Image 1 (cartoon, rainbow, N blue to C red):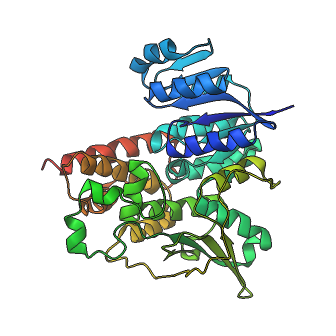
Image 2: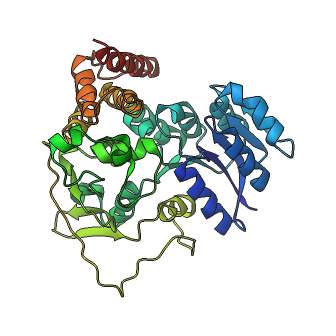
Image 3: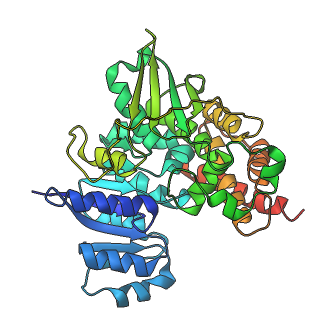
Length: 383
C-alpha cells in the first residue's frame, strides 16, 4: 500500500519542492491532504492535479474561491483552525510541516500528538514550543525528521557516533546577500537588496531572515531542542557555496560533514524515506568541476542575531516565542517600508529584554508571549 502524506504549506517554496519529490515517489506515496494560508488559486491548481481527499485554507474569505476553482469534491476546510482540522481528520503516515512562521504551530503539535512522522520544515514550531513538542513526541512515539538542510545534515552526521561523543555541531550559513556589507550600508538596504539571496530560491520571509542571519539564530534554538544540545555546543560558520550543509565534530577530533548540491528536494525526500535512501529528483554535486569551499567566521557585530540565538537557546522558556514573534513582526514592518533593515534585529532584541520571562511555560503562556512581543514591536515603531 502507498504511504499517505499531508503537506502543510503546499503553495510555499518548501511545499512546492515537496510536490516535486512526490512526483518522483508517486509509486510509493500518495497525497491525501494539502493546506495553504491564503493562496487559494495555487492551492486549487495543486489539488486538481493531485486529487487529495482533503484541502484546507486558513483564510476563511478565500474558502468560496477555493471551492469554485476545484474540479472535484474533496473535503474543504477553511478558517484559522483549518490546518489543525486537516491533520486531525485525515489519516496519514506523514505530515510535512512547511508553513512559514507561527501559523503552523497548532497543526504541527497535533501531528506529534497523534504520533505521526513529522517532516519538519517549520523551524518556528521548535523555536516557540520545543519544550512542549519534544517531550510530547517521546510520549506519543512520533518521529521528527528535520527538513531544514542544516538540521538534516546534522541528523545524518549524528549517525556516525553517540550524542554524548559530540564536541560541537556546526551550522553552515551562506551569509546571505549582505555577507560583505558594512553596517552603514546594511542600514540603507532596500527590500529588493534583502530578497536577493545568492544561493537559494526562497520566499520573502525566509530570504530576509537569511539576510539578517536571524534564520541561523532560529536554527541554533531549533538544534538545541531537536538534538538535546547545550547552546555552547552549537556554532555557526559562513560557507558561501552552500555545499557543506552542516558538520558534527566528535570527541576524537573527527568531523563528519554532509555535502550536496543546494537543492531542498534532498532533505525533503530523506525526511520522507528515512532510513532508506532512494533515487530522486534532486540535483547531483558535480565533483569533476574544480570548486572552492570557503569557510568564514561570522561577524556578530554586523549580524547580532547570532548572539540572540545563543542567548535564547540558553534561556529556553518563553524566550523562543518572543524571538520568533518579534522577528516576524519586525520583518513585516521592513517589508512594509516602515523600518530600516538593521532595525529588524534591534527591535527583536528589545522585545527579548522587555518581556516577562517564564522558565516552564504552558501553551497559553507561549501564545501570550507571542502576542505581546508582536504588540511591543509595533508599538516601538510608533513611539
